[in-house]
Image (cartoon, rainbow, N blue to C red; front, top):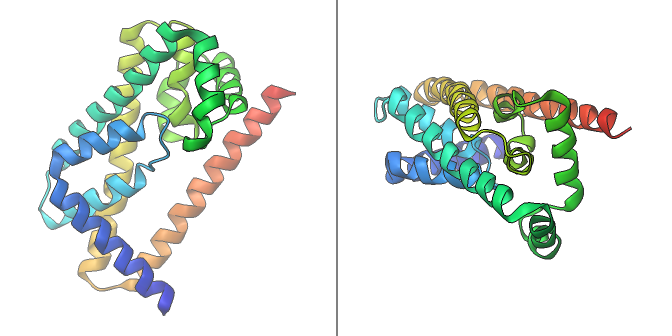
Length: 210
């Protein structure tokens, strides 16, 4: 019962926070999420989905502001990687990476992932935990055409936003009906999916490294 109350209070807090920040808040938070800072997009867009269900936000506007924010954050890392170069980026990561839970090995793995799967990884990575925070770095190193990078990022971000928004939408239905058991089940299922995707990504990384 205590766990249910904790989940409920946490969800309500996030919903209230996102509601007070509005679309501009979603844009800024998703811009931060798309850099190397460990801010999960789930904490932004699932509450936004609840607000969509309540009629307090428009799903199209949420997707647009979310995708544009993701593009801005991704472009920032892309340009830094492209114009600072590998040596400078590696040096910065070595000195300051620990503050954002980033190390040189993570960058190397993201490069292998990018090289193995090609430019389409910019789209795919938006759907994968961990990778989406790093994939802009090898894209910048490789000087991937900016228009391709932008298009893949926008479409990938928009699709992932839609998934999270509608997950939050069904959260909203459960909250409206005060069905805490459904909220818990949905929450656990979603966490398991994220963990599963994370394990798949790590397994692919390990295969590449061998």
